[in-house]
Image 1 (spheres, one colour):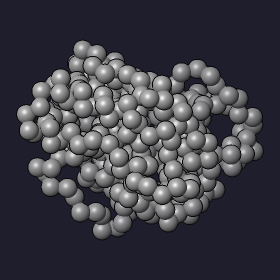
Image 2 (tube, one colour):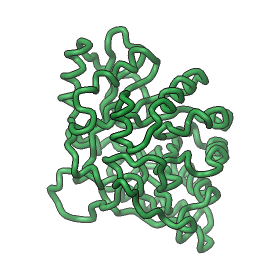
Image 3 (cartoon, one colour):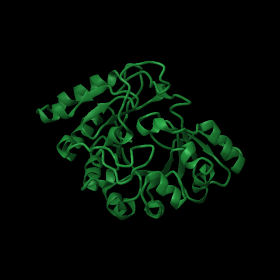
Length: 324
């Protein structure tokens, strides 16, 4: 469907849990956050209904995320059920990768099309500092196993001055040695991220060009979202930049988000949207749910307000609670 800005909305990000097995410093405090009660989280059956209704409005691609989606029991069954919905063309996963290696066989069998793995360093000690946990070896093993299974892999890097500044070229090298895309995603001023210093895309491009030579714009299709991709000589994969703060791309935004508690969130920066859990549990039929979603999506905000220039219904939750 199209919103009032004539943007085609065909992509739904679905958070299946607010829980996570890591404690990344830009996402949550060391002690974690108070988890939502289990009965407040959408059941898998409820998630499937929302995805089905969304598909009737034109959504064709579903991203399953969290928190960390793989900590929720029975996740592969949800993936399988969403994948077989008649109008859904692609189901992908965003994960921190720690649990991925042991689950890849069942996820591949369920029809997983692609996986985005969050990874901010290749240094074990730095990994532990950022995530407050061990597990780098598990993540790198999972990357190799996913490639062996012919699952498309993208590496999501959050460049933060205090955490991985000066080592971004090392992460980019993964796209040279393996057929993966490495994407640098600008830190958004949400939750704990407000206390850290982002490294913006232009600075990263300069660093990579000093290390590897010119970045050549790549105009081919690489995914569902707003990343700008570049080629580097002798690299198997591409280098991507998602520059939501320094280069706003709201006019081309094609997505909405479903939080784990059933809130259809229209823009990452605002707490506006519509509760779907209430109608789901009050007996709304699919036609009513679809109409509620349609009315909400039509009024998707024109653009974010990460600059803080205007007051309003700005989001106060962290990414684990929203759905990363």
